[in-house]
Picture (cartoon, rainbow, N blue to C red):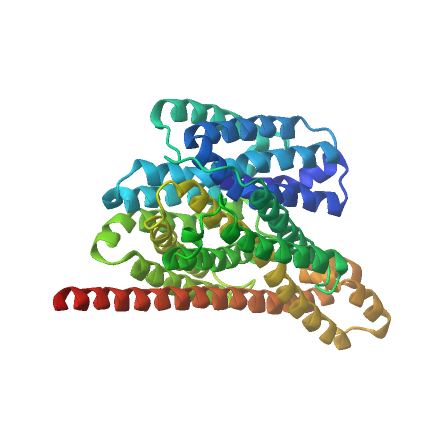
Length: 491
């Protein structure tokens, strides 16, 4: 439900804009308000669960999310909708922090990898079905239906949680680290806000630089505070855990790539190639089905190989798939597109459960909630950073290509064309053609395609970096195991 909401609302944005008379800034915040509160409050949700009971706090988050979804559906203004999206993100942050924690506490080590694989598969299904479900709902109902769909799911979730989940919490409750919670929440909010704004502004803009700089300073202060305070929100033992640090880094990089690939692929196929929202969503199933199959196999693979080795194989497959996606154009056959999605989905299906198992297998006793919170925060921050940085890279490349191609246009049209650079870089090739004539369409398509290729290749670089981090950790773990075996033999 959490990931469904990240994608299903995108399909409804034009209808929301029309009915509520939203300008472009308000429309962006319909998406960003949810992502911002989600990213900023996930660690706090994990800490509250560890202290007061994971089942109890998870249920509270689920109820808040469900009620906020209904409030979103009933909103009659931009301000009301954005405010309700913030509250929805708060509920989602609590749930996101504790789903993985509840699984880790419920399952023993020998079956945890399979449980995490099922968890990852269902999460991926929600993410991939968002545009499909949204397209089907909007074909018959108003935009409010994309929020109403959460209400029955939430109601069933409450019942299942009450019946099927056993309460768990930190056996030795720690004092609540209020100052640490404040530093982390405000710091993450600042970083997320800055990168969200970077999608439409230059990185030299004070609106982008100031919140990112303030957020980074606060997060550095948060780490220092956690090492000094007697009751840290994030235990220093967790911060020093090499496997956990590896997982956080890999998660950040792979989610940075995933969010950016799906963003630019949607622009290419829907705005440039002319696919409908439903067609775009259905094409994602070519990625989601291999993801689910691979995630289901993760438990078996974990027993034959190490989780880090499986994660490395997944990173390499995802890198290959994304590299292939970078060469797609408006004339690429659909079958080739689906094959690229399939390789990418297979890679992500292997790496996501494996790297999650690496992180959660060595978490200190009683800290699974905050550990899951930090891990999920790295995903949300990776998403916002990816959309900001990769978006900037892609838009800059497309803008340069567009401006460089204007020598082929009549002199009278050049100043108008220069003003359309941002629109072309965002996939608005039809709008450019409408103002400049059909001859400009091919130039706009070429410019956007260049920006798309540069952006997707930068995502492939991020995935290659994730593979390198996984390989380094695998090598270090192997060396550590060899040293322990040698010491045991000498003893």
